[in-house]
Length: 132
Image (tube, rainbow, N blue to C red; front, top):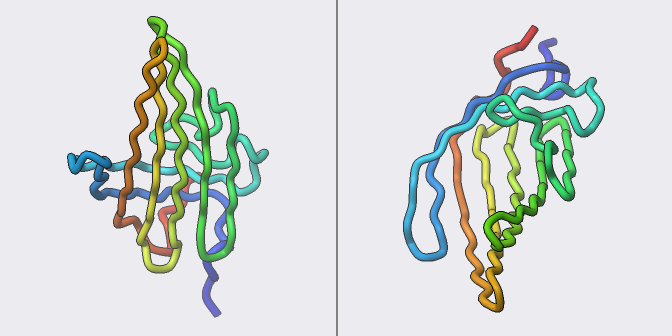
């Protein structure tokens, strides 16, 4: 009788893959999540060392035995430009495949630019590397 996905409460998931912008440009991306299921919701997932909820205008984290999903929105204003970025990423803990979507809007004066991105990642599969 081994552990089932979801038994470990603190672990690391590393992912790498390709993100494709709506204009056809693509780039490689990698990230590491430290997941602490016993922490408060806003502190459960750290993306490359930073809480996924830090600075977010909205954030939800869903940790289920077979998948982990984050949805975040961030808003920034700098040099008269206002930008909003939303991300939705789901990691399948068994197959190791992660799918992500991003959507952004940038407003400067009366000009509004929108862009989107889709990404597929190959991630560590269960069992994950434990973090002490």
